[in-house]
Amino acid sequence: METLEIEGKTIDEAIEKACDEFNVSREKLNIEIISEGASGFLGLGGKKAKIRASIMSLDVTLNAPLEQRQKMIQEETPDDSGSGKFMETEDSGESVGMKAKIFLEGILSRMNLSCSVTFEETPEVIVLNIKGDGSGLIIGKRGQNLDAIQYIVNRTVRKSANVPKMIVVDTEEYRKRREDSLVALAEKIGDKVKKTKKAAALSYLNAHDRRIIHLALQNEKLLTTKSQGEGEYRKIIIMPAKKD
Image (cartoon, rainbow, N blue to C red; front, side, top):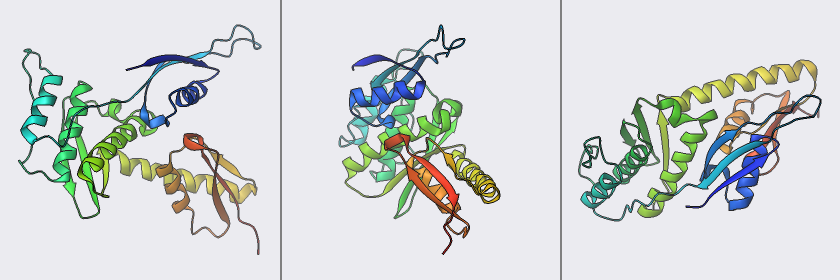
């Protein structure tokens, strides 16, 4: 797998360069921050931010029989004794939820995280819940790691199973806590905009988070929201609503 070291004035700029270099969006990259950079004194002696980037790649084949997939992941994730060890599944069915559970367990094993995975499946959505230590690493900054894991699971499992059903990956109720915090932030900034009559920007939110902000303020008659920018660098503008 190709790995590149990329510099920029800021971490965000370096990540943007990496996205351009690999021609993929942010959630498809493994990003390791080497140095965060510094502006220096009076613009002198500054240091550029530096990252190490590569494309996320997992090669577990979901079309293989359940026992074969277990063996493949087992061979990839040896335990301390040197022999393979695979997490026991809850049943031997071949449902989409079970495929997603097994695939997610393989990802966590490769991250050297000892976590259990449970799932709930409805006609509309599959929710995978990760339980155990390491939730901070799994979540990442503003949920970036969790979103990246969710993207990989959706792309692989949904393509293999050929179903439109959305797969949500969560841990320690992070999704709900994130939604609650975004709604509170939207209301706080919204109140400020109503008082000052000046627009305010919330930058660098993914599509899911932007939707939460839009929905939180959609019934505010004195406010309006819009997205601005491109790709993963889109931001939300909260502004006073125009009078009729």
